[in-house]
Image (cartoon, rainbow, N blue to C red; front, top):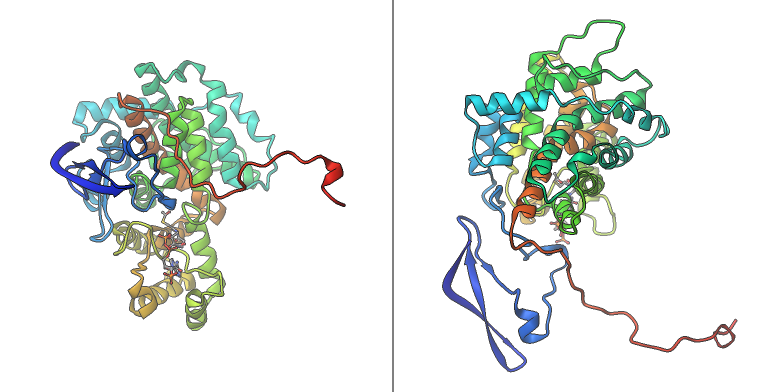
Length: 433
Ligand code: ACO
């Protein structure tokens, strides 16, 4: 970040205040208002942070108007097409694509840390079988800090590194155990001879009584889904992780906080909601009715999988996801998927409809990921879990960047208070009946 010679001048209370303007490498400049309160005794007001940059970051760049997403400068399309998730994890964490030796060392380390403390497996039986898998994830990922005390000191770079690798390695195991527990099947231990995505599919879908061979096309699709979800700059869950981490909380607790935030239907829960919506629409003939509902201000219904706070153009991940969905359906020989028919038709209609065009509401990644995940064999309740698994590396990269920033301070937003002004305590006898 560099400071420009230019200043923004604010006229407040008869005073002219100069605010420095700072430049990144790409994207909008920022006005540094950190001295505003000291100078003007005034806060800024920006609910939902629509105009506020909460931090400086070198990890992910989004141009929502142009539909661009870069991880460390590399376009998501190129990473999804030519790279894989392990390479993407390395890139997000360390800033560059690994060379052969670096990749081998990193992949080996991740592969050899996939088992979880055996005692953790008993944790699962404390949950109801019908618990939402995200509830189990929040609990068990938070519980990692109770099992791995040797990597919770955030001031020790080595411990930060170990915690980072542990989470990337163990999240698939925890996610698969969450799934197995929910369907009453025995846990399947990780296998070190399989790739990251294949191992995950194996842990989810193998059973002890028969061999299970991972289909490479499906493993590639799974890997791509992980890559597409790996990071997305300062979204709600990432900001949650940063805010939790700013107090010095341990990394496992911070990632559990991120998982809790991701669960919401306006964020990671949207892929589950999108598929439920497609099922509710059921047939292409019903689409006009649902489009009308989405446009009706008196109806809370929204087209799930449409719209994005940042993308006011096609979400670049949605295009790749659409292709992946077709590849998976073709591989599995699913020719007529009524939900896919509804999805394709709905997309076409919404993209031409004035309401959606005017508001720049395009399909987001969740629109097609639900169809793909369902075809891979996951129930809808697992969709957000898979998102959390993939996003863990992004959360960790962002958390590390924050901890390593010498200017890092506890995050503490201010408020515009509109409640009662000071008043005196009233005894019960004078409060009426
Ligand atoms: N269906 C119908 N109308 C919509 C939709 C939608 N999906 N999304 C936004 N709008 C309308 C709003 O009603 C509003 O209309 P108005 O200007 O007439 O009042 C306008 O578009 C702007 O919407 P906001 O809610 O102000 O936009 P915001 O940036 O706050 O919300 C959000 C973004 C939450 C993603 C929203 O588009 C939404 O709820 N989409 C459905 C849920 C979804 O798919 N979420 C996934 C996000 S991506 C992710 O987390 C991976």
